[in-house]
Length: 113
Image 1 (tube, helix red, strand yellow):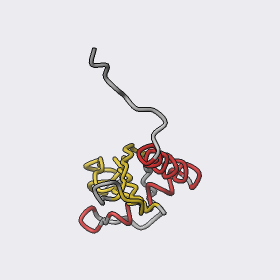
Image 2 (cartoon, one colour):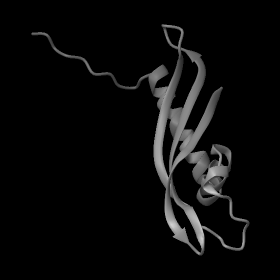
Image 3 (cartoon, one colour):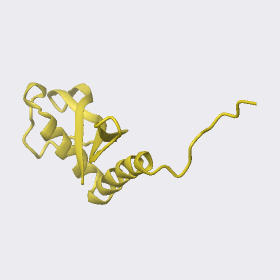
Image 4 (cartoon, helix red, strand yellow):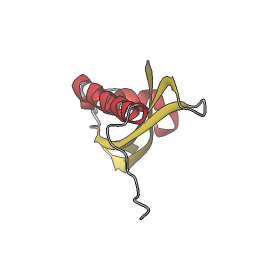
């Protein structure tokens, strides 16, 4: 089984938009996937996928001040803007990176002579 941790704590903001301050418009996200399979050293296999997602401020929704934002809130915005298909694709890609570590299909070797 693979667990996914979304980190959406790094954001870009507009200092002033529609009378609001520090309005988030872009999220720099990180997804860390952790497998329950352990490597030879007893550590879980992990992978990391990075990206960014534009989010749109909707003045019809209640505004959340920057100081009240949490990773959970911004992750929800990010995943909602992406759509479930893209979220699944990102998590599947992260899992495939782990699978490549567990069972590599290619390795690099150096010829000594």
